[in-house]
Image 1 (cartoon, helix red, strand yellow):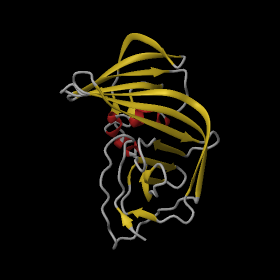
Image 2 (cartoon, rainbow, N blue to C red; image 1 turned 90 degrees about the vertical axis):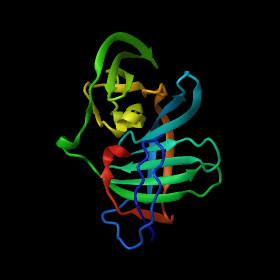
Image 3 (cartoon, rainbow, N blue to C red; image 1 turned 60 degrees about the horizontal axis):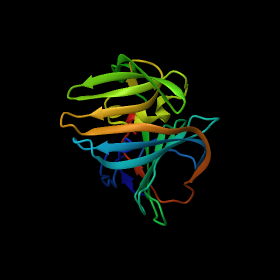
Length: 235
């Protein structure tokens, strides 16, 4: 059984390289043989250059259980073997990651534990309300802005959805790597992040609460195990 350092994908963030470790035994890595989800939310991320030229678009799905807490994040592959998927098992506090999905390619598997941060470790992103409103997918949304060091952007939030932001675009944006919570309540429908050089990333919701069954079957797969535990919010 291989032992590996757990990578930390923030959906579209660059995948950190895995490093082999054969002498340390992974502790507390327990997962189910299969996971089935019956609902999904669809999103996309658009990356723009400083001249507002669209450079690339990524598509994602968050699969979840209408009667449970587990969920999975799937990066839809642009080509054969270019996908990545992560299952979050909240009962066992374990994340199972699949790399190289799509087409007939055989993915590699990695399982590792995560921990929930305590209250002192939680980081909040302060949002400034504006008077702007608009509808996104039929939901009334209010615009907020934020600034963090040399990064700034805007967030569109609705109070008409009770779904947690773990299943939405906030978890997928760059700022989620730095902040786990927001200073206002509600569900994030869109979020923009812009850096000092003018590069901009737009995360937006395409559909919510769609009936779609998806099953992960890990029975008999060659599963590597991570030797380290990471913060729950870094996946």
